[in-house]
Length: 171
Image 1: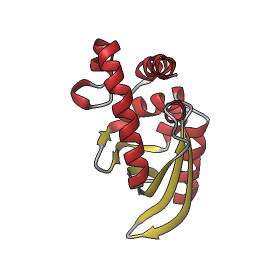
Image 2 (image 1 turned 180 degrees about the vertical axis):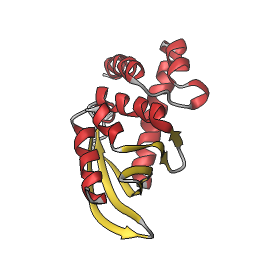
Image 3 (image 1 turned 90 degrees about the vertical axis):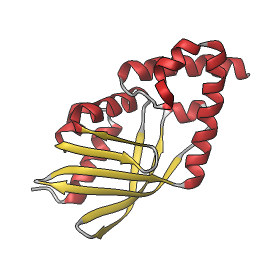
Image 4 (image 1 turned 120 degrees about the vertical axis):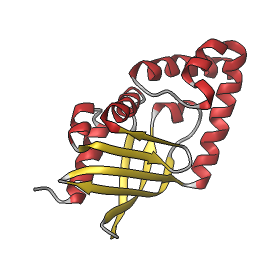
């Protein structure tokens, strides 16, 4: 049986190669994935939508500085993806990513973004959304209904197209 750290590295590898099914195979059916202060997704279907989004956006995760604490494995992390790069963000940092396990699978992931990264993303999202509300109001209302991002393969493709238009308009 793999160690918890080996499971996390297998998750990182599957995520970075955009193998959505391999990621889901490492997760408990009762998975709970939360981004502190932003959102929580529960169950394999909701996490599949996140992974499909990340695959289209070419997300790359790096986990580092591991430590065990209270039956949990904690680490720091860095993410890069096409969404971030398009809006001028080189990397996003996570001060804490906490993994909890159940029967050899990841049961809970809780990530806390570094405050500077969170502020930078907020600014970028606000800039793009304000522009899109003027130019493509129906599209942005569908992609971010009631200010909540919708994730999934189709939504990521639509965001890529929207971001290309935003970038052209900004230059």
